[in-house]
Length: 277
Image (tube, rainbow, N blue to C red; front, side, top):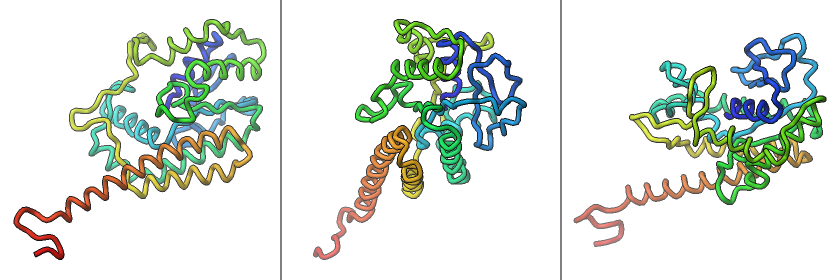
């Protein structure tokens, strides 16, 4: 989630093209987009992959990243424009029940791979929620978010790649708004005007439900990653924020389930509850 947004932001900050794992990448590319080691990512087998000296790891809460991937696959299957339509809830539930465990495992493997590959001074961890500002008001991910994320990205690039002409600090706010807030303005890509906000399919709204077990599985993965990288403050910070969010979801799930049980157990008119005469 957000790979195209980050590519546009990098290009706007540097004036240099970015590359893509699935297409011929220009030698003069400031960054290359990849989903590796996800199965929809390339194996990075191009002849100069070993020259990559650092990584910008964009992470999104799997609670939202997994449904976003489902929407992407649904759009492709239906021949729709990317980032245009959310899959119907029924489609999501069927796909989720089949794919959830694999997708969550790949989410974890991606983080583990890149954090292990590069030390803290050669990687930058950004979150989709932080870059866009789309996080709960109390989320830790809003600390240093939005325009500050663009500044952090610019600083990392200037240290990692020689000869870049980064836009002046005074223009960061304008660059961030122009690129990231594309859901409030029209942009053109390849001559096609698009808007990133997905609309709801007529057969269902934007809600993407999970089972209690799936929410618990996410929490378990966050804790595994925190334990594995306990000395990596940037990783722990993100996992703690996601853990708080999904814990709230699980709490609400339990409340709803308790209410459902209460409703199902309530006597109907004319009936007596257990112990009543």
